[in-house]
Amino acid sequence: MENGGYVGGTNPAGKKVIAELRGVSKRFGDVLAASELNLSIGEGEFLSFLGPSGCGKTTALRMLAGFEAPSEGDVLLDGEVVNTLDAHHRPVNMVFQQYALFPHMTVAQNIGYGLRQRRPRLPRAQIAEKVGKALDVVQLGGFESRRIWEMSGGQQQRVALARAIINEPKLLLLDEPMAALDRKLRKEMQIELQDLQRQLGITFVLVTHDQEEALSMSDRICIMRDGRIVQIGSPQQLYDRPNSRYVADFVGTSNFFDGKISDRSGELATVALDNGMSVQGKPGADLSVGQEVCISVRPEQMKLHHRHAGVDVEVHNRIFLGEHTEYLVSHETLGDFLVLSPRQSELAEGPFNVGDKATVTWEPSAALILDRN
Ligand SMILES: Nc1ncnc2c1ncn2[C@@H]1O[C@H](COP(=O)(O)OP(=O)(O)O)[C@@H](O)[C@H]1O
Ligand SMILES: [Mg+2]
Image (cartoon, rainbow, N blue to C red; front, top):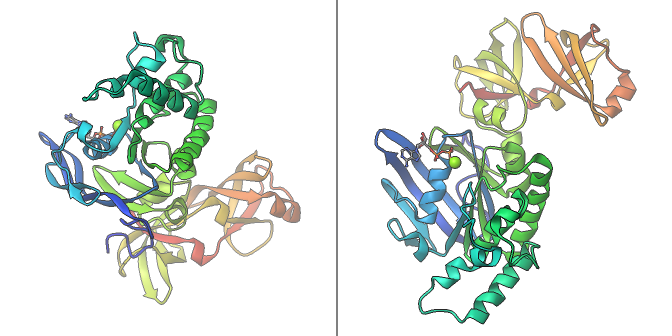
């Protein structure tokens, strides 16, 4: 089963499909930049491609936009195959990683550029009106006559957005649009972008390598690796039910322990860890006895105790984070791992100091058994 039997999938729930990738691959010479992508994008959806640099995110986006044709498979918009249809004939707009603004033009000239290229020509007053509206949407009203080089990074980002939404595209593609902004500004823009999407009702496809960004903004996320989509799901589905170690590691933080499945019956399976311990866990996919796997336990699923049966550890580091305290603990053979202790249990159990002996427990259902890769 492609998704390890897990929920989440290539189709948006209960939404009209407006764009589709069907078995889409893209080769650049020897490089397989995209491999057998299957995905349906729903109307009004906020979808993200998330993965490390070079995994094929931009390539996927460029095929949706019409800047690249697939080597194999089909790209569909509104149910029609558009594999070789030019970008400017698609109801799609793209915001590029480098905003690709014309530095010598004013803000208004940049935003209205596409409209001025239209034939038959649009009346100037109509262009000015549309530009004004687009500027209002991105909160840059009054900046019409500024030159691009007079605008800050965040403002340039908004100009690029305004230029993309002025045509009222059905699909807006955003390639790491926040990459050039500092952290604080990025946070602000993330919220603005979400507001904008709700306000306009346009379908957004965002490319990012920033998991926080993808988690906080998206309805669904496609996790990519080496040109392939390895899992698609809502942020919560991916966090709670990753189908591989790769996804568990990429989405959030987790502790991993390697081992082999020694028994499988019912809901849980038993894993013989490499250090000789035997632990129970919940299989995250179709796994068979003898298979090399890893156990994944999120730090917040682990509990730290003073005197209790459990895994014996020593506290190596303690970081007070207000709401939570993060402990780095060390086990003789399992090595170091993280435990996130909520304020509540800190108050009940008392704090743990560096050097303290403690025990760690977790529910078997919180230990996901995953493919090691
Ligand atoms: N025009 C191209 N010519 C040759 N190789 C390319 C081209 N575009 C992308 N690639 C290669 O395809 C792979 C995926 O690239 P890309 O889609 O840009 O990844 P991402 O956006 O996830 O960083 C990379 O190995 C990249 O070097
Ligand atoms: Mg890219």
